[in-house]
Image (cartoon, rainbow, N blue to C red):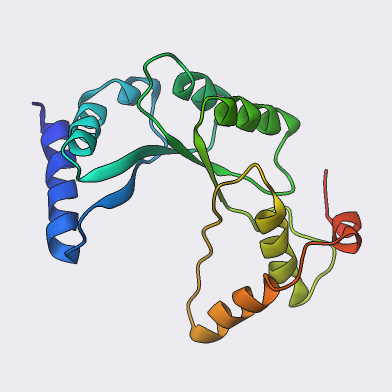
Length: 173
């Protein structure tokens, strides 16, 4: 095994040991290059999945068109893609999402606040949270919070459906 594979395997083992969790749900490769999807780090990720240390292998993507082509290629071990997704996402990203979903790949959005709303004020984050939750193409929506108050705001925002008035106010270039 190469140094990269040893580092990946050691990172997985260390995370499991230090956190005392039994298994990692998704082990992400961050913005991998094409060669990373077949290299030593990926081999270590596959070995960790086979050993029951990792449930799913994922990547993060800032170049969905190219990454979707690699992920949907025959034999790709990638099962989840965390991708930039917001109101400014180009139409070809929506096509890539459909291609990924057709292959059974999980879709996790990131940087969802990009593009924003023309609503302004404190309603913007709540409306975006509802927009993400209403998008059936997505499999989950990671939401970061710093305080209990923010957590409560997010839960409150999701108690209401994303509606047509918010849809009309979204910003698209």
